Length: 390
Image (tube, rainbow, N blue to C red):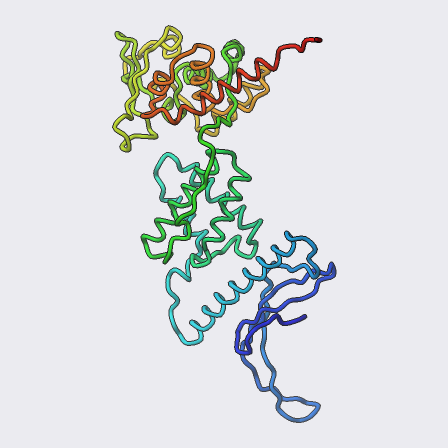
């Protein structure tokens, strides 16, 4: 056991213990006062000091050899020092009968969970995912804080590391989507005086918006999928509808027969994603014979066109159906929207402006990823030609 460089009056003190494998385990040693006890051997009173230990599950390598090992030692020591300071503040507040500020007493993980419990918007699945990603990040990078992290321990350095973690673990839009939800909770905490200074200020999760990272289904694969039987006809009908209309799951699940103008063969609905945020949230799509057939006849009452289970349930069913069709691609529900756009621009040579309008985009920038995907498919097709012996 050895004490690290600390001041004499620090309580707790940061200490280290050498383990059997050579690593130094960091821990805090608290001095809790003393008792006078009678020593039967000497017949005199003696002082017995009371101490307790708290191991931080943070370790130092005794002889770091690589820059990565030295950096890890530096980060673990800095984190242990930060924890020691926070513990000392809490101990002093208790000692002098002072009430800690709310921002220092709250467990941010529990605060995040409570926020989600009262969250009513449709992106709650992404919000839950953001919390889980943050928990996983803490478990890997800050194990001592994985179940209890104080708001004032959320600093800019940690947020930058969290973004790097997201970009490594989550692909493309997923990384940015999770960080946007995480920042939403941080902002809420700042507005309610839980966090003094926003640690996410100036930090962005940058992804390549012009690259399409999800798989798309070709027109031939869509035909194969359509001919493949599946036990849930509603899921099959709805997904094929999205492949031919470019709708998101959150929109197709809300479609009602009142959204269909059968006489003019038009579908008119408001996008959930842009409702209340854009003047162009209303989308009008001409209905082909295939789409009319998938919609089916209007019942007497005004009801939903498709009766679907949860998004998670649909994804599981879709995975089984795609596998049964012999298609070796990772297909999610949103792939239908991407497939619609890529097939229009690639196979059917539809102009960019028309595709943007059908997808409900107010500008052309979001369509760039489909243009690049079409170029990629062209390159793949050309490279698939057999080589000539010249």
